[in-house]
Length: 236
Image 1 (cartoon, rainbow, N blue to C red):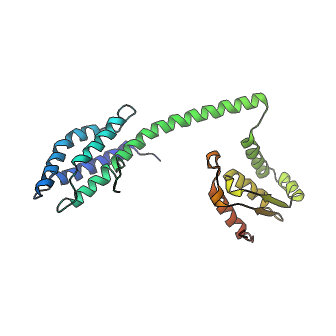
Image 2: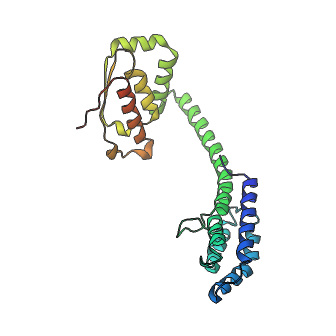
């Protein structure tokens, strides 16, 4: 789920309170007092920029303003540690060295990503619809179609599953670390059926096809399923 405008507003209120606490600290050393004064002077300008979440036009200046403001940040010390840590978490991130990873900018980025994500999903749906239409026109299927339709056939037609079970008793799958969830579902349906034997070979450290959808966790999950069904793991 993406952030909402209300989430951003609430985080900004937290930042307002933290900045008020930091600016109101007194009794500091001369150097710390100079930085406190500098951050108090610069805060109104940054607050005006933060008033609205970033959009595609304002995101560079939004990020730059937050980075520049860090130069005014007082060091942690007597009377300032708590307030500085709160401001750090809300603007730059709690971990040392983080830049523009605090709660406020992160929520702002997520709001921007939400709009782009919806547009991207719409575009992908349109591409998928056009691709399906073209495949129907040409009466062809691709590799994903073969897998999806096979799984649907086995699930919705028990008589087909029965014929497969009668014909095939042993299944061997090599390089199982490079399979995906769909392929796991297929092998679970085929290889875990009554009377069948499923043998998988793989090495999690050799998984190299993540770029095309392979999920190394599938190997771990399938291994656990086989062992739960009475299978044995044999390290090589």
